Length: 281
Ligand code: PAF
Image 1 (cartoon, rainbow, N blue to C red):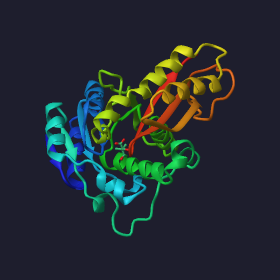
Image 2 (cartoon, protein in one colour):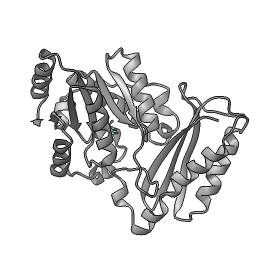
Image 3 (cartoon, helix red, strand yellow):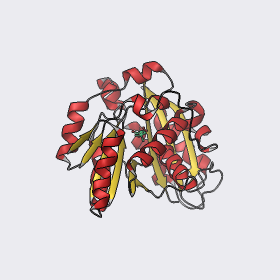
């Protein structure tokens, strides 16, 4: 596995793949890798001749410095996992590599960045769209892989890639779950043992919504079902619940006639977890 610390290095490696006629899949990450990331790698390996991963804790997508500081950094273990999974090259850029001194260019999906999760995390999706656009330009992949768990992030990246005419296929990979249903996340390690036991309530609430949904069920009824299940778990504080039309990513209301995406976020102690489900009534 080639470990590239600079942008010129990864460009040379990818140019070698291209020269040999190989297709390239990109797996952008912020490190602290878990099986969810490995599912992205294995999807990339299944569809591309070469797989490039990036590990970069992107400062522009964090609201508070404390959050950025607290983000887990496990580089050695991450590199070992990527190597075992058969990744061909990894880029480990510095903040200065990605954001050269005096940089002033941003990428923003103007509507999508400010709604739902974006409304409570101002600037977050601008940071994501900007760094992903840069990584697409740096690595020049054929395909790039992102988890469906970050449902709005995936929508932002798809829209950004389409609007800016990137010749990159954005591929969403289904959420990987622990045996008890908790969606895998780098944040799960920060949960107390009690909160870790309580956290699968998110998935349980989505299961209940899925069971409730049939043609004619209203978006409001689905939301009620989810709120009811979350309310049975005193350790969970529901923070966000949005039901959107798949594709347009606009709020769903009234009787459901087409697939919807449910996005949910809840706090357990000081750890905010998110989960998601697409439901066809
Ligand atoms: O999902 C993530 O880990 C990050 O938001 C991403 C897509 C790597 C951009 O920093």
